[in-house]
Length: 573
Ligand code: ATP
Ligand code: MG
Image 1 (cartoon, rainbow, N blue to C red):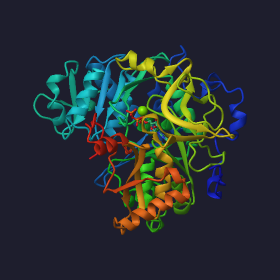
Image 2: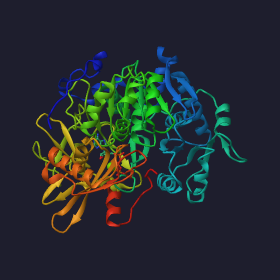
Image 3: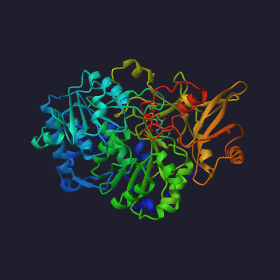
């Protein structure tokens, strides 16, 4: 479990921004890094101005800030000054429609340039920006638009019909701005932009003023509207610099959609703040396309998710060899536990390990991470970011000793900590126990201060008096040569309390059989533990996932027990 891997030579092409983790942690104070971001003279700031405009005033003004590749092969480039001017224009459009500080402006668009421009424009005018994943249907949209009380919605001619279905049920929604073809009486994005000035006096925001509201992924239940403040940009900037190791000349591809927090904090704000070039690909996942994006744009730093990594691994090691991926120098993963096997697969396929990091919509930025200058223990999420105190606590909030499993908790506050749950103060309060923020995840810490994810508190299995985290069983399963992915649940059992049941997706070329089932059980018994192997296995074509790609174990369980599915608004198809 505590095996460390050496960093390959390729990774040393650049000196890590965080040279010494230990040294930096000593006496770390966020205030000492305030100069990393841009402040107005009056102590105010604006996260969008910080991400874009401050670079547009320097020699970086003509540098490409955004490389965009459309789903049908079109491509566009935007410089920092281009992003500044166009987001200024959109801020003017919003101001003309009476949008001011604190109003909610939501964007419901595919990953097209207008999504980025309007998101930045909304922040510049002082609005609370929100993004909605383009695959959402009317119910998911209604939940979020109604709860947030959005005043303006930016969408396009393809997606607008889904909003019209629920339009009458959204009393606070004043206006829709439509990208693309418009009908009589609709507001055209293009026309408004054409008429708007490119000069805009950016709203100066108090560090505690709200910046964006984003709904969680809905893995465990109904999504919550998490509100972040402008001060979050400090942490988003610094974590992008030290965890994602962004250097000015990096070409950075964050594969997350801005409908999820990773796509905002690192897919827009924290990364641009470091003056890098972003890559955005509009289309869906496909191994061939993804490798070709890396090749075409010479991506150097790649931030993606375990679900994608498992799918790439499932497509084989020969495929990446067909592309020139030599530009890659640093790989990161977030969103779900990263099976150790996938760290090794990165080494095999790209000569680089994936660096896992952990955070949540509520934490607003990376809190626990692997760093370029710190050895990786495959299967561990890494160590707390400098300035972050993470602990393992019992249900009363008492800290537990090294090695003990318990609630992963973070000492409050930190700059990107959520400031409220929108219109739900009770829910907000429920996250805290004394001065700990309790994450809802279970973990343990080892003797070297590495954190190990066990499972979500709701997903942990109690079998024959033992607690088993689904993650370690799933990780053992994906080591088996026939297995692409696995979802593991506890199934009620009169004798053992629960038994472990695994739902398994097989690699191409493998067929379900009793023999294979026995072989997989034996494999887990040998590699993990006698008590933690799945007594039941079901082969499935796919696992239920959120739109952001997370395995939804609560749904596997509900199906197994014939219970209602609960909130399914964020599930993929
Ligand atoms: P909801 O809160 O609505 O159920 P969610 O928790 O999936 O949805 P997010 O905020 O997008 O919504 O995800 C945060 C969660 O994702 C974490 O609490 C954790 O369970 C999981 N997670 C994120 N990164 C990692 C990681 N590196 N290792 C293990 N789990 C991770
Ligand atoms: Mg959550």
